Length: 247
Image (cartoon, rainbow, N blue to C red; front, side, top):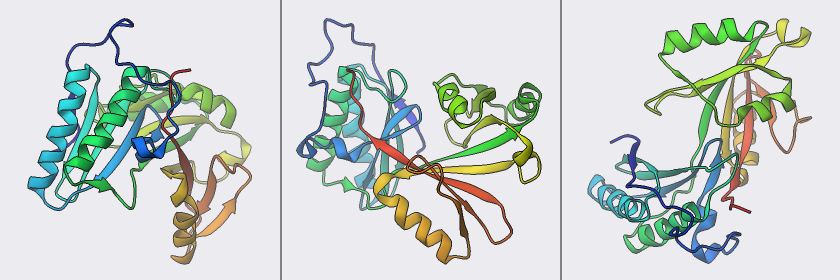
């Protein structure tokens, strides 16, 4: 069972659950969750499909009662939950409440944070003519334009070439477009961005290097590290953040 939304209605400002604005206590389960672009995501280990379905149902019930959208991906060995953010890297009070309550409920149901944590893979395309390149990929993949604050990141990393596109079914990787310069025009112009929990970055890089890759650049650290495979094809490892709160 892949990525379905559990939601019912929406809280207004007056009836949103009362949750502290700054969740820092690990005892409440916020450290289960990491920021992955447009959602905060937690992944829980399960022992069987039956167990996973119980965990997913418990998490979904929390979201439905709170009126908060929750994306749930169910596998026999893991349940992944995602709460869409209210803005770039932010959850509103209702979202923080659901993150805490889901963490509590899944533990009662016998699930624990997965040792590998959640991750997100994106495809990044360096483009000289962003709109033209974006139009090709959008139609080829039958994707939708995405407006989730990626423009701020693109401006920092080299300027937005075009709006990103993403899978409306939330199954395939999103594709974003970075303005290409002379350096990009002379090398491969498609690479992967691999977002993993910050605690896993060092191990993931070490494993890739041990498998024959190399570290191309750490100039973007701590935001990203550039790696290459034995033939020079590049990928970036990016640390995901912790649960954000509305401030």
